[in-house]
Image (cartoon, rainbow, N blue to C red; front, side, top):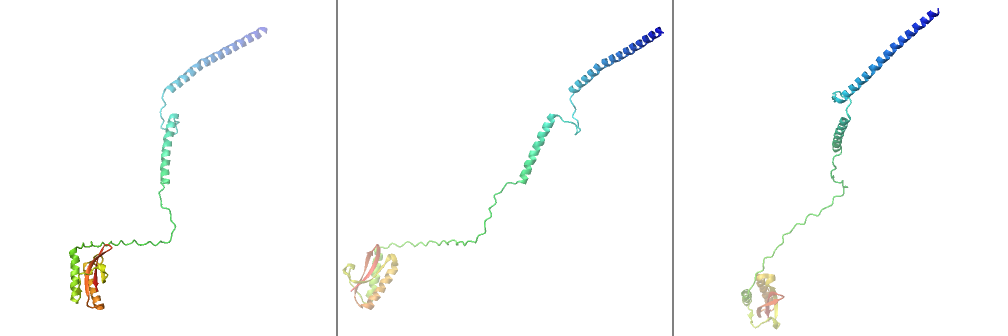
Length: 214
């Protein structure tokens, strides 16, 4: 009986050793297989890192940081240009519009003064001694025709009575003769037949003529 128990224990021990050896073999196999898997995954990662990633046409694919930065800069430039265009369109440059003035009563403006042409007097003729002598001779003949007696001794300074004093500057050549004849007519009406003389007299720069009578 004791032998059977010992035999049974020995068999059990052998079975346990066999099981343990099998477990150890399995564990060694697992350990030997894990490093190869790790090495394979590392080599795969190394190969993956050395190969440049293909640009995916899928819009949902992730984009690198540099591409994102370039795209962001381009988008900001387009956005700023669009904003500038919108600002120019929305806010046109201010124009100088005339300020609205309050309505005031219309002021009466004076019509422009008509410019009257300046009348220039013709230059006065220069008279000579010949003209003076012709005036005196004409009036003498007119008085002698009335019966007056010519007295060549009369002078203006002697204080004889006289009429006249027309001047060539104011009355002209014919005006002087007409005025002296008028005085002869006046003397004839007032005095009648008398002595007379026509003399030239300068007064204030003017050449005057006088009919002396007595």
